[in-house]
Image (cartoon, rainbow, N blue to C red; front, side, top):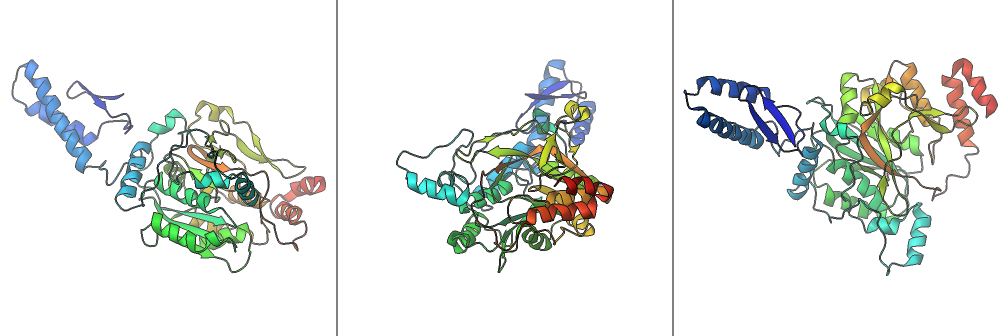
Length: 430
């Protein structure tokens, strides 16, 4: 129960804990003061109930028509954001979807074909048959720190666009990525979703994908699918999508994710303070077999090993441990999920188009991270923004056969361009 103490009326006001408002409105405070001064000299036993009644009427009117109207929502409140999303789904913003709770591991019925499950697992790297039986807008656990629920953000935040490149992705996981991100974000902030098809051959990613997007996102122009005529790779697919964005902020995301509760405002708040800030969410884990979502850990800074350029995680600094809900600086990003302004991305020159990225993250996250820090920007991880991701044990599709050792070539290119006198330490050990 959240209580707000009004010095004007000496009445303790119980507010709905789901709304998580940190303080009473200044307008309401001044109204109570004026009412108290102008009330006639009534007995004390009548004055308190009358004040409570008047204040209740004011609160009711403010909820119905004021700054926290269900039609407008409060972007400071994750509960209000979810309520807004539900309202839009059932009033035309999104088509209603099958409810299904996703807080526990799921399993297929006994009648499910073991052969079909195995074939789909081999084709996708995760239990795609189970994914098809789970609702696109399933409920998920709130893995944020408790402090995140009362964290304040600017009332006016920049608009954002989601860019999701994909190649041979399973249809239900791709749709769940888009639907979950839209459903758990304030609708006035997420203005478009751009999916970039890197020459997929699966029939489901053609007409069926277009039909599903039209069903779940009937708002005209909200979703777009850009299709490459030939295989270009991850980096060029991302750049194709970013070039089509019209919003202030670009959010790059993998095609097999689920966005957590109120995931978007914590990414946009630091960017609103400085357009040269890049923010990454905390990445949780979706079990590839059961689709259970669990926390990866309590947070870490991104780094790399000098002998192999493998991404690794460093412990948090003491300051970040004391304020674990606050964004903290990180040397390099994991690569697949981040938010940055179009302006800053273009000023940095975008990605190095000479990097060949076809599968897992193989160099582009270092190139972009080094560029951000060395050109006057900063990069943060936001613990209050949670996005769950499916980690696969193998890549289910093949890369072009004429690439050679493109991974080593990428790393050497990044080291030669950005590491100056330290490049020899890296390339020699490679």
